[in-house]
Length: 397
Image 1 (cartoon, rainbow, N blue to C red):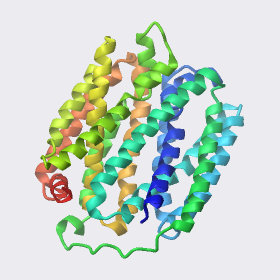
Image 2 (image 1 turned 135 degrees about the vertical axis):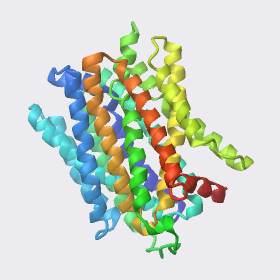
Image 3 (image 1 turned 120 degrees about the vertical axis):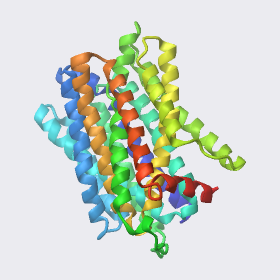
C-alpha cells in the first residue's frame, strides 16, 4: 500500500467526520431555528434515530462488501448520500426532513468500511500506530466539524449545513473514484494462527458488551454539552461553545504525541482500569458550575477517552483476523452505535426531566459500570480479551 493511497483513504474519513459533526453539538439550536421545536426529548429522539439507522445499515454494507470491492461501493453510496443531503436542505416539511436525513445517514454509514479496509492492508505491527492516527483524525475532524457548525449557525441559515454535507459527500466520491485506479492488488491474507484466541468469535461479543456500556456512558454528555456551556455563561457565544465542546480532540493529539514518546522510551502503558478512573473523574468535574473546573474536566475526559478508544479498538484487531475484519468490525460497531443511540435518547429524557447537569452524573455511573465489566471479563477471559492488548503492545514496541 503506497503512502498516497493511505493518505487519501484517511482523507475520506476526515471529510465524512467533519460533515457528520457539524450539527452534532447544535441539533437543539437547529430544530429550534428551523422547525420551532425546543423539546430536548424530541432532539434526543432524532439523534437516537440517526444512530439506529447507522447501527442497522453498516452491517448491511459490510455484508455487501463481501461481494463488491469497498471503493466502487463507496462511490455509489456516497452519491446517494449527497443527493439525500441536498434533499434535506430543501425539505420544509418535518416528516419529509426526517425521511431524507435518515436516508442520508443510511448511505453515509458505508464510509465506516474504510476503517477495516485500511486495517486489512496494514501489517499487524503497524496496527497500534494506525489506530491511534485514525483516532486523532476522527477527533480533529470533530473539531473542524464543530467549529464549522458554529460558524454556519451564526452566519448562515441553519439548513446550509446540509449543503456542506452534500459537498463533502461528492468530494468523497471523487476521491474514491481516483483511489480505484491506485488500489493495490489483492494481498494474500496473513496466516491464521491456530490458537483459541483466533479460533472463537466469543471474544468479539465480550468486547461488544464493554463497548456498548462505554459508548453509552461516554456519549451521554455530548448532545447537550454546548447547551450546558451556554447556560453557564452570560455570553452565550455559539462559536466559543463549539470550541469548548472540541477540547477532547486537542487532548487526543497530546495523547498521540505522548504515546509516541512512550513507545520510543519502551515504557509500559498505563493500566486500562486506571484510565477509567481518570475518565470518570473528568466527567464528574464537568458537572461543576465553575468554568475552569469544567474545562479541566473536559481536558481529562478527552485524554482518557482517546486512550480507551485506541486500546479497545486494538483489542478488536487482536482477536480478529484480516479476512474477518469488516465482519467483526460491523459487530462491534453495532454495539457502539447502540450505545450512542441509547445515549442520545437517554440524554434528551434526562435533560427534560432533571436538567442539563444530570447526564454527567449518569455518565460517571455508567463509566464505572464499564470499568467493572472490563475487570470481570479480564478475570473470566484473561487470555482472550484483556491480555491481548498487553501482548500486542509489547510486540508492537
